Length: 336
Image (cartoon, rainbow, N blue to C red; front, top):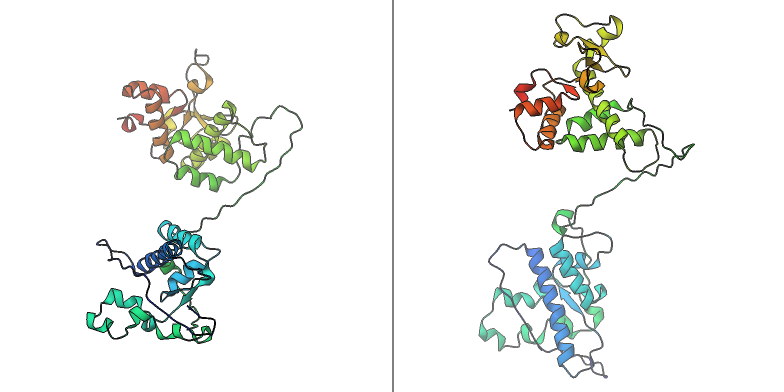
């Protein structure tokens, strides 16, 4: 309080102390809780006292709390963010100042003092000595740098967006190209997928993006093209020599793992089983299945997807369903 003649008077009005919780809480969080308590006390005093309080000045010996309050850009963890929001709702960052710990009377409550000391004009009741001086004599300590780990900053997540504008010559969308680009990226997608259904949804979007096709809902043709694209990627890594032999000689070596399947290349260059019956009453995919290796992660995805799709029926039923499109050597080892 400052009188018109310039006389300054300080007096104890209200104090509140809380015990630290049993559960471990870091010192910066306890200091932040104390700052929240200060704003609540100020709000209570303004409502209860019949005095014209023109301004409020808050003092804290925690530089971390001041960093919290003066922050305008970074985001904090939920615990810190909620309390900083409450403090800023009831006070302004400019009202907060730093006081050295040796001059802070609030430490007397946490550290404890003898009752006899309170009777000898103690600072707990009359305030620190600098408050009895003009504001020009108050402590003015600059804030130092604080490590980000101590400030409990929320991890920043960045998102990269790409706007792809493509024009089509007609309103009817053309079939998606079946030969994918960026095979190395597709290899990564295949190796890091844990579900076949999810994989066949990722690949068509990838292919569509790389070919700058108008974005829209995926069609059945897109899913079929994705299935063929995934199969070709797998075959090129597993049957590289066999594909080369089929392209040059039209047949594979007798020592090949798939020699007994009498493979042939389809129009897209994918090895398929050559059916013995020329015109069976089944689809072309079921007559000449795509050959896939047994020891591949995507092959296991196909088995699990088929098993789930048929309602977890018996092994023979699952094998028959898989062979409507794919031929996996020793498939019975996988279907258990």
